[in-house]
Image (tube, rainbow, N blue to C red):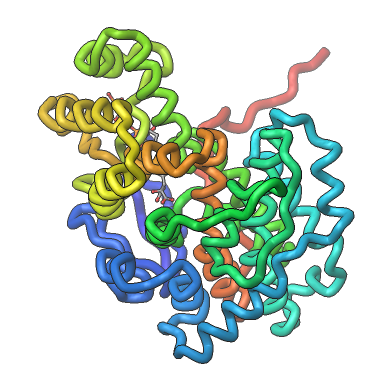
Length: 390
Ligand code: SDX
């Protein structure tokens, strides 16, 4: 099944990908995970329950979910040699580089994981990825702080264990804040899948060559790193800080965006598919106020973000280009209030998106009709010519 897209240069036959996992209607601002609207999923579910739904297609039974949760808890430990991998890194290594390198290295510890046809091995790799990516991300955070790594605590839930690994220390007991835990679980749900975005398409393309799931996810992490994609949440906070420090105010910044000053974009705005509103941005904005209030955090960057959104939405320049806030516009302010440094924002997106990447890799891998990916090209180079006599 192929779709046709008209480009300036004429018709290009773009092979479209078939998938049953996520549905988006960009004009209507609709997002559904396996048919369930994102608003209902975010309100009623948890990250692990949604991960099962995306990967296996149905809401898990209580026993399925508790067995899944159990298996993940029992696979949180990294191989001790992989823990030592962090010693070789500079303290200021960007966590996204750490994540893609460590995830790619994971396959070297599990010989069987290189098989892409053995269902048992695939299920084992899925559990290991879900269990270990948060630990790798937390260790990248601790490395940047020069603090000792904690071992995972399997008595805690997925999100609580992740929070303790990031904010707990060897010096004193760590008490999880339930507000923080629930807010983070909800934010992770909002990132779990998003159809054929750049990083998921990367995972599918790499996976279509029968590369193992760790190699495919590592490639997806690298695609997500870019500031036009997952890296946007870190870029939004940098933009808000620059507006604050410049003292020029929001309107002056908006003028710079409209004048297309070199590289100045309204980060966290715009989307390839949503040309109206991103339903996730609406949900994130709602929780921004709740979370900051519950954590007793006052942050004028949130006020600047709200003013920036209001000024942009009232300006024809953005309306004409169908530019609205996307999922990344408010998440950074919340992550900052939770205590994460900006460099940890995109790793949080990666942990959120991991179940989607896994679901797409598995869907493609289980489909006997899958062929190696080969994106179409429209040749716009020189016609045939003769090599000059010399
Ligand atoms: C994510 O695909 C997904 O689903 C991704 C994602 C997911 O869940 O996986 O939703 C997550 O990546 C969200 C997007 C995060 N990125 C950003 O916030 C970065 C800032 N946004 C952009 O750079 C941009 O909007 C994109 C990359 C998101 C989308 O780019 P498009 O649709 O290709 O738009 P374009 O570059 O063709 O721009 C169209 C016009 C241009 O102006 P003109 O040349 O017509 O005058 O809109 C302008 C652009 O200059 N424009 C912007 C802008 N985004 C587009 N102008 C200012 N600020 C922006 N953010």
